[in-house]
Length: 346
Ligand SMILES: Cc1cc2nc3c(=O)[nH]c(=O)nc-3n(C[C@H](O)[C@H](O)[C@H](O)COP(=O)(O)OP(=O)(O)OC[C@H]3O[C@@H](n4cnc5c(N)ncnc54)[C@H](O)[C@@H]3O)c2cc1C
Image: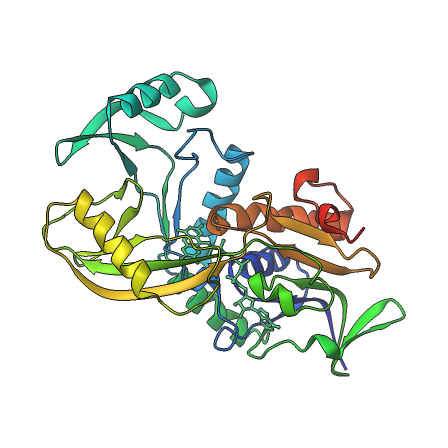
């Protein structure tokens, strides 16, 4: 019988940032992941982050803490794994009309939003742009592959679907398949939580989405351009263009409707020819109140849930992982509005 401190189920950004944090705390763990049969939203994400809500121009809650922790996490991953995955580049938002310019001008002087909006406006294709600060993109594929390889070498990665029926409570430990005993199990299983008999009471509001990879030789921008969609440079005249939102058709297959929608939006933004060379689709594990969901099972001790990262997983995950482990190991409180208690069956 092998003994470890913790099992993590799922190696999207939630599971991977947990793994890193456990490693930092010298806690042994093993991570189960099977993205071939159980696809991962993290490997579909275009990887952009920004601190502001584009409609109301207010910052995401606890934004400075999230940004500080995220910047440190990806920098540590780059050094530790000897990879490049973190690109702090500007986001420039096209302001469609005089009213929008006025609104952005007003918000520039507000203490909470102003710090994230550059003083000077710019221009793209004869339209005014505003530059948002502390924005950028993460190359999740690079991070995933390199971290997975390291975890495999350390015998901390098991490439199989975790079989929930094989998890049994035994005195004060959890035993899995009669081969592994652990103190804690954390489920970071994204939208697949619907198949998880321990936590399927969580009522997510997932959102399907597509992202295109598009070749635009004449565009030549080194920032993320945003209007109602974003255009994010990935090198060699290629750009990620996305994303769509669909709450009705929760599939992982790319859709022609989404491609046509993104192409038509792209034509309205750039005056150049382009060629679509790739497309991916996935499902965001979004919650109804747009807050992550973490905490312990209502009755089963040391079974933990980590879900609800929605459309902002790459920004939020590193800090949420810290909060969850502080609770698990030190019984420290985290913000109430992300507590799984709000989903407990009545
Ligand atoms: C089209 C699209 C674009 C997006 N763009 C962005 C973006 O630009 N920026 C951003 O921050 N976010 C973006 N997101 C959102 C982001 O993808 C999510 O917030 C984030 O990936 C959620 O991470 P997660 O780890 O919770 O879930 P996932 O990444 O889905 O990971 C869950 C993992 O659990 C594994 N798993 C599930 N059940 C089991 C089991 N029984 N056994 C073993 N393994 C299991 C799966 O294999 C999977 O790897 C986008 C999402 C989509 C769909």
